[in-house]
Image (tube, rainbow, N blue to C red; front, side, top):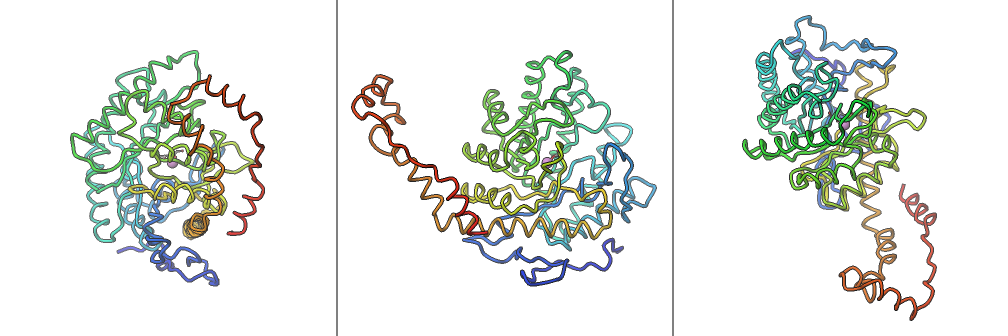
Length: 437
Ligand code: XUL
Ligand code: CO
């Protein structure tokens, strides 16, 4: 079989002292952190769209600048098959347990839905055999309902129900394919489910439509017995000015308003959270507080650029804070750490794909180990617990139980006078975190 990543072997753990750029310094899949191995905690996943299909394009360079040895055939299906084989070679050499795809990444559209679906079936068959051969599993599948010109004004939120029908048909098929590949989750990222101008938009109508689409998907999941978790991925903007799935809090409110909360969890992406004006750990904490944190798209933005740069995660504070939230909720369950990240336009060699993923995996491994130590030592946790101790006794407990009124508050203040002023100790807590890094 043709080798696409020639000269690069299986990436192994060699420890922090190694000078081999194709080795892990911190990610040792078999090493235990608490009761689980690193591999079980992190459930790393490579995305097909950036890693296999990304061309390094940007608004001023719309043609691909990467020469990928798997994209040489002029026959689109042959190129798709070569790409799939190269993908599994990459997953295996990198040693990730999972991958993720959009329907349109793995298989080019045909002239009709029928032809498109037949092509997809052919590619899913190949993916299934490569999964069996390599042991690599599918973290999630998703439908690309945003690239085709028909989705210019949205998919589920399109003013035309004919376009909604296309989205529904595509999601139906892609969920079937995800099930056939044993996918652990199915993701909804509403690429164009928002508006670019309120003057031509009926916002309430569009949100009703979106809820119908998600309801249909949740019903279909039950109908076919798909066992994966359904995940909604928030993003505030880009390509639209405003996306309805703005951030974790917005999506949770939307799901609750439309009686969908029991059927969906969230897939949270670092750079989407920062675009929404939040930290990643903010959005993770919001979702985890409701028991709805399903999976993460691991990447980072650039403080000096205002768009979704999808860079590989290297910031150890970011990975540590993220892993603290994840560990506190008891792990990601069916989810994983999915590298929805791309190498820079100038990083056009295939070896750059290895450097990028190795760096991201090591950064998350360090984040995991550091977060586990912080939680185990309990200094931060004990401080927070102590800070809210008043709510577990006396008047605090009565308030939370709903057994107190505003008149009781008035009587309490008359009796106890001024409240004590207690420092939040933010700087000390930051020092504590630094002492682990
Ligand atoms: C876009 C994005 C998507 C989703 C899947 O910003 O994150 O790639 O993760 O559609
Ligand atoms: Co994403």
